[in-house]
Image (spheres, one colour):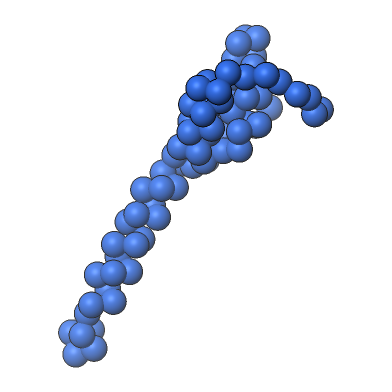
Length: 82
């Protein structure tokens, strides 16, 4: 369901940052926060989240490591690959 909310600017900015850090859309962060406040566990409707959903926190770290690996392997001379 769509709705309109008035959220103080600073709280909105903090929530957007938190959603980005978790690798989830803002609407999902708000839904999870409401469910938690109402005493419901949002993971109950998505049991797979207990294992896989939390890996989203590693998305930035994985991208950073991949970038380093690409840079380092790009510097290997062809003769060293034998």
